[in-house]
Image (cartoon, rainbow, N blue to C red; front, side, top):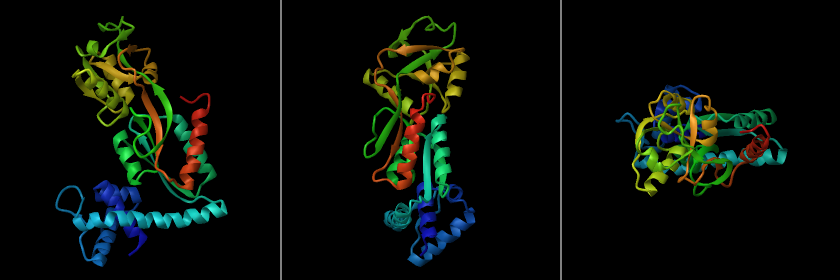
Length: 296
């Protein structure tokens, strides 16, 4: 049994797909499949049910998964322990970023970290916030930038980067455009364009509506703020964005404070604990990058 076989096994289990797992570990799909087959022969049991479009774990696979993760973590810890005493950080970091949220300071932090620690391989994964949080909890993602309605997701550590209110954004000529403030019930009369479920902004909006027993008309959904703004600017729906997002489109849209949504939308870095020396270093670079006066 080889560590690379366990790595491929864990990748397929988490991705539920051989092709995506192969992309993640940077080898061909046939290579991943061959190594998994060798591992199964050695263990004397099939680890995956391959009869469906997704690769799902068998009973034997489920029994093996946590032990495989533990073995990989133990192997990584050997290198980390040596690195700490030799002042050299090696290994691999998987960084998550919520879809549609390009935050320059995070890229600055990654670049500075890479210059200081070229021995660490960095991979970037885009996904919605809910899946990134689960990835951090499962150990598949080391550090993630997420949108959230809660300051710290359960079981994780967090650093809040941005805290701001939700706003509604409408084009000139819209019936709400002359009003500086609106309520959720005001918005209930109009179609809405917003982020999809699983994102921080959408979670906050849904929770606020549910608290008042309001069922908004979600006519359109998009993962990128640019797309949401473009759809709203064409008069198709009222956009739900954060204050800073809406400010980028003030030439086309008027931002209206939603006065009965007082809980802020948060953009936060989240990570598990205990964390590796590489994660500690990247956190230090991230804190500095987001503290710069030009960061937004």
